Amino acid sequence: MAYRMNMPPKEVRASQKLFGTDGVRGKANVYPMTAEVAMQLGRALAFLIRNGPHRHRVIIGKDTRLSGYMLEQALAAGIISMGVDVELVGPLPTPGISNLTTSMRADAGAVISASHNPYEDNGIKFFWRDGFKLPDETEGKIEELVSSGSIDSIRPTATKIGRAFRMEDARGRYIVYLKATFPRELTLEGMTIVVDCANGAAYRTAPSVLEELGAKVITLGVEPDGKNINHKCGALYPENLARMVVKHGAHLGIALDGDADRLIVVDEKGKVVDGDAIMAICTSELVARKQLKKKTLVATVMSNIGLERAVSRWGVKVARTRVGDRHVVDEMRRNGYNLGGEQSGHLIFLDHTTTGDGTLAALQLLAVMCRAGKPLSELASIFEPVPQTLLNVAVKQKKELGELPEVMKAIKSVEQRLGKSGRVLVRFSGTEPKVRVLIEGEDAARNEAYAKEIGNALSKALNG
Image 1 (cartoon, helix red, strand yellow):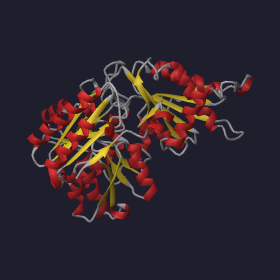
Image 2: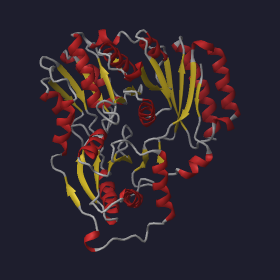
Image 3: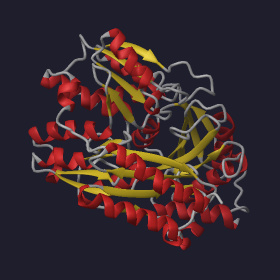
Image 4: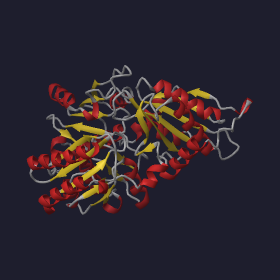
């Protein structure tokens, strides 16, 4: 079985030069992640949300990157210059901004973050007033407004200029919301949890939530300095978390990424449990409680075939989408599903939230553990992954895969050798200059060799 995710058609790329799979992203202070572009994005967003006589507002949050100060001020200036007010909340997880946008009846929310990327990168992504990320067509309108200069002459003056406010209780509001998603009859008393916040946006919220629910919390990655976000810590680097879980005899470890919208956990034995396994565990619980809508789980093409095998025992189907939590959410909203996510740890519980939320997902998993009275390792045993190899190939340019004959030849060759027992997925990253090669098959050593074979062909074709 083969999956190929090519780049979008050329006409789509031409109309979306700024926005990728998750907002605008790049190296901070280098186009497009400059203060000038941030200001233009703010003006364009503000122009689109002005739809009545009431005072409009945008919530702006960020992670802990050094460049966040620069982009926050520029984005706010752009929004204010169009006569729209801003509420500055400072460092707060991406899903926290989504939640505040809806709970405060704001017109939009903005997050300044490059998620799991290193500190020198940054990004800007937007939420609409309903708490969901902007659809492609709205992002296209923003980009058109930025590039055309059609709103340059719109300059409110005097009292019509917007204002900026600092929201002092944003963190507390988000913590209360998170705690409310945890079953009231349950408690985390008696549990020891190690949490790694990646020196990112959740460095205060995640430990507080767990402690207030009764857990003994051991913290890692809670000393951000503007440069150490995601640096050998968090969801991308769970090795230290695993060691600390074993050292302290903890019940589990929780790893978040820089903006805390994804979750990776470690069981009591120090074994990493990824998004696929968490989805399998939570699917089991929702089925048992007759709460999984339409008995369907939504996952992306990156999820392991073992996920489908695991949930099929409960009569659950897996609907697959393109990579990116926004595509998972779109599929869920379109068809009325309530659980979905990615192997990487973006998990969406649509009964509670509108986007991936690492802390919220951890609470749902902890609720399953509390009700079952079983260790995480036992719960995770329901999921048996087929061996996968994921190879990231750095490239200097991006082209349609169909325009690369030697690459297509290598892909088809591997597909033939894998047969029906495996699959190949080759896709360009939407956030980094990389091509991701995924090989899934019963033989791990062969998977690695096949990935290198395709990777070599890609490198020759795109780095020449």
